[in-house]
View 1 (spheres, rainbow over the protein chains, first blue to last red):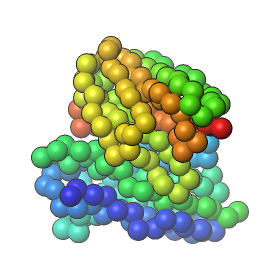
View 2: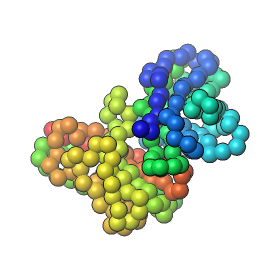
View 3: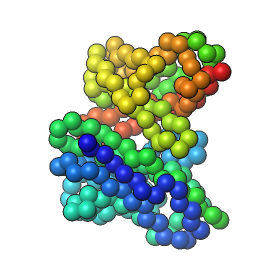
Amino acid sequence: AQSVSQHNHHVILSEAASLELGCNYSYGGTVNLFWYVQYPGQHLQLLLKYFSGDPLVKGIKGFEAEFIKSKFSFNLRKPSVQWSDTAEYFCAVIFLSGTYKYIFGTGTRLKVLA
Amino acid sequence: NAGVTQTPKFRVLKTGQSMTLLCAQDMNHEYMYWYRQDPGMGLRLIHYSVGEGTTAKGEVPDGYNVSRLKKQNFLLGLESAAPSQTSVYFCASRDGYNEQFFGPGTRLTVL
């Protein structure tokens, strides 16, 4: 079955630390990939997306993600986190074959300590 | 553009009462979704629609019904509310193979 995994459920970092959040998906051919952020008390908003081309994509607020096709991964990174990055982060994948399902990972809750 | 709007923002129900949550989008999107979000459980898909007049079950459809009579609206109904349906409900829409746009959410408490 098609699935999306986020292995880190909770991450705590100090300000200025580097961030990497993992996202893996099951094999399913061609995919479009997304990272969303949900700040406390708010709805999900798009951080960045990858459809094709350069596997290193840059998003808003200094976030970037790298698509590694051989590893079925789309990890989110930020070189230096800020207290305002405290939020929940969701990876999502749409599988462009078969069921064309749009699947969200279970989310990673990030807390940044000032 | 208002994007995706949800009505109401908050609601408190007693067990057994019914209610309808309204989702509206002004982006002419084909796909619409209803999710519930509970602490520690991420987003769970309740029902979705791939176009006007169509609906389909997601992973947690029991106790909910939906309708998509107009392309811009997606209604979620609770016929007989239960405390287990206390949650935050999000509606979303998308077009093509693009990102989903989310509404602000409805916080529902069932006593």
